[in-house]
Length: 381
Image (cartoon, rainbow, N blue to C red; front, top):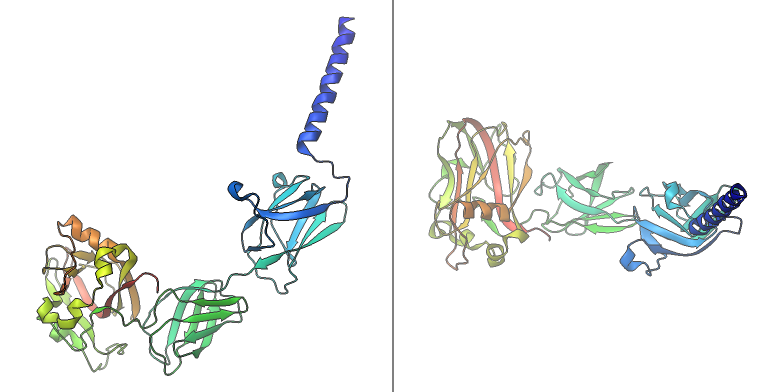
C-alpha cells in the first residue's frame, strides 16, 4: 500500500513541476506570433517604447508566441541572436552595425515553422564622426588624412569656405582628401547619405598661438627659425617654423625658444584665463616634423607659468613623423600636473606668461626636428 501511495505521490510531483516549468518558461508557441512593441533594455527605462534604434543598440522585442524565433533581420541584414535571450514573450537582440544596401525600415522575425513576422522599425544610421587629423595644417593641394568613424561611402568632405575636397581614398576609419585651393581656418564637414558630421577640432587652428616665430620674438632661438626653406628643408605650413638640426649630448641643454612676457609680447597673453582655471578642458597642440627620429633626450616645455623654470613638462621620446608634418596633442591638464609635481601652480595674470622650449635629457639625440604653431585650444571646437 505504501509503495502504491509513493508512486501516486511521485506522479503528482512530476505533473506539478511540469506545470510550473511550463508556466514559468511560457514557451507554448502554438499560437500566432505577434509583436506588441519594442523597448529599450535598461531596467529603469523599461516603459520607454521605441520605433527606431541606433547601430549596435540592444533592444527588446515584446509580444506573444515569439519563442520559435530562429532569425531576425533589420533592413535585410541578419542580427546575431542568442537562444537564452528568446522567450515566448520577448526577444533581446542587438541591432546590426552594418550599413544596409537598401533601407526598408523593417525588422523581420523568422520562425522554426517557416513563417515570418514583419514589424515597422527604423535603424538610425550614424552620421560621420570626425575626431582628428594626422596634421591639422595641410597646404592647399596637399593630401589631408582625416580620422573618425561611420565613414560610409559615398562621402563628401567640405573644407572651410564651403569648398569641396577631392576624396582620394576611404579605408576603415580614415579618409584621404585633397585640400582645395582657397581653404581657410575652420571646421571640416564630412557628409554621407546618413548625415553630416563636423570636426571636433579646427582645421589650421589659429587660436591662442603662444609660439610660432612669425616673426621671431624672445631672447633665444633666432638661429633655428626657417623663413625661406632651402634644399632639404620641409615646406612652410604657416609662415616661419623652427628647425633644430644638431647633435645634442646627454644632459646637453639646448634652448630652442625662450622669453619673458615682455620678450614674447602679445603671444605671452594668448593663453585663455579659462585654460588656467580649467586645464582639463584644453590641450596643447603643435605641429612637428621629425626628419630623424626623436629617440633621445626630451622636449621640455614651460607655458602658462610666471617664471622661466619653476617647473616644466617634458614631452618624451620616442616619436617619428617620418619626414612629414604631423599634429601632436598633449593634455594641458597633464602639463599642469607636471608643474604641480615640481612645486609650481598656474595663476591667472594679465601680465602674460613665460615661454620656454628646451631640448634636454639623459640620453644623446641626433636631432633634426621642426616645430610650429604651439597653441592651447579647447578639447572640443
